[in-house]
Amino acid sequence: MDSFTPASPITVPPAIPDQPPRVWKFWGTALWGLFIFAAMFVGQLTVVAYFVLRHGSFDVAEAIRVVGGGLTISLSVMMGLPAVVLAVWIAIRPTRTSFADYLALRWTSWRNFLIGVVALAALVGCWDLLSRALGREIQPGFMGEVLKSAQTDGALWLLVVAFCIAAPVSEEILARGFLYRGWSESRLGVAGAIFLSSLAWTSLHLQYDWFFFGEVFSIGLLLGYLRYRTSSTWLTIVLHGINNLAATIQTFWLAG
Image 1: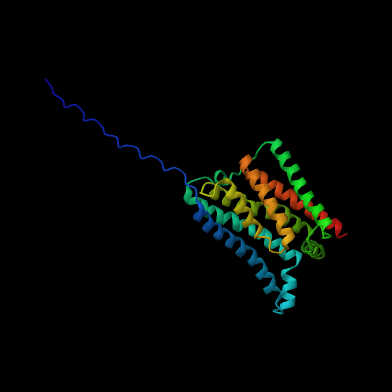
Image 2: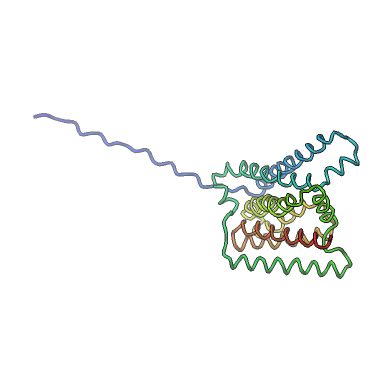
C-alpha cells in the first residue's frame, strides 16, 4: 500500500494592522504652519523680486512704487496659492490622510451656506456702522490705492481674481483647514483652535490698522465657528471669497 505523508499545514503570518491616520497636534501644527507661511511668503516674494529686477532700478522710492503696484500685488497673491498648496501637501503626506479629508475640503448643505452668508453680512454690517459712528472710512485706504493702481496697469481683473479667489483659497487652507484641524485635536480644543487660527490669520493682514485688525479677527472667529459646525472648509473658502468680492466692489464704488 502506498503511503503518503499528510501535507504540513500552511502557516499564514498574522496580518500587520494598518497604522491609523495621524493628525499633527499643537507643536507639529505650529511648526508646519510656519513652514507653510514661509512658502507663501517665498512664492509672493518671487514675483516682487522679479518686478524689481526687471525694472532695473534700485532707487528706493521707485522700488516701493513698483512693489505696491496693483499688478505686482495681484500676481504675488496668486503665486502664493500654489506655494501654499504644495507646502500643505508636504505637511499632510506623513499623516497618511488624504489631502481633502485632512483639510475638510467637502461641501455642506445650502442651508448652512445661507446661514453663513447672513451671519457674515450681519457681522460686516455692524463693523460698517461702527466705522461710520467713529467717523472712519468704511474701507481701508490701502484697498482704494491698490484698486486705482491695478486699474492704471490694466490689471483690475487680475486683482479681482487674486483677492476673491487666490487669497481666500490659500488663506483658508492654511487657517481653517490645516491650523484648525491640528489645534482642534490638541489640548487647545475647538474654542482654542478657533481663537488661535483666527489670530494667525489676522496676522497675515499687516497692511491694516487696529480697527480693521479687529474686523478681520472677528470674521476669522465666525469662519472658524462655521468650520466647526459644518465640518466644511469649502464653505469658509466661498464665504471668504464673497466677503472679499463685496469689499472690492464697495471700495471701487466709493473710490468712484
